Length: 403
Image (cartoon, rainbow, N blue to C red; front, side, top):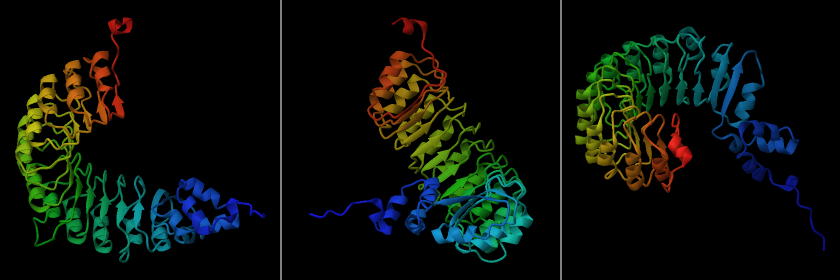
């Protein structure tokens, strides 16, 4: 009986497109060079769904943007910018995501030439480390990018409160805002974002993620604004904010939608601040108080009482001991990630308590825990779900080597 030979060339283009969609970006491009049939299949938009094109804009390439549009690519990262940004905007009128992170030569003038009319398709804009960008650019962004949902401004040190007023006026759909190291931003600017100046701007009341890392001018008043106006916030990063204190945690404790709170290296946060958080209406799943040298065993007791739903907890370099671990582990059964690196008072006893009670742990950081031994580690490695174990700076003692 005649049997038809089965070969990959017999596959329908739709089947090839499904197969090609599982390849990485480099190999997606390579299969297009095999033959005409594979090229046609590889250009199917389903193959490139969600892919971000990474471009060096150095010289004119007339076929570049038509090729990207044919593939349905709507996300672009500019790795180096030696041409006008308007070249990108004009070439991709339906662009959804534009990543300009690290384009140090980008200026307000350059953005001004690119953003000259509404770009309603753009949802994500990353200007991190574009150090020449100032409030003038935020004025353009607020005016023409009305549907923006994510704005990254980390390291844009020329941004001031006036720029945030423009953001609060124009970007009402904004869900994520990163202001890391924006050194001129103060409580006034956070007030604008939170809708505290309604006569001038409605505010970004849809915000779900706010990063204020290393904004040194912020005080507890900012937290009062945030708690009052940004009730839907799910993630708040206050790391390295030296002006934040325990009193500010009273305001944070009222944010019932908040899921993740980062207080790393907030020098004025102590056990009292953790007490305020534990006594509020928070349902935190993630908390980072690493390098807060006023955090001790009493904080762990408060967490066990009011923050027992935590799934991730970072306590690196905090003054906690086996006693604090004992008070915490009996209540926090949902914990999956525990970072206690450089907690030099923790011994094998603490590890045994963790192994006995935190059976859902998938990752633990013991970097620099110099008082633990092989005995404690053997107990930790018996955790049924453990996948990640960091033991940097741990050394086996001479007596353990002999054994």
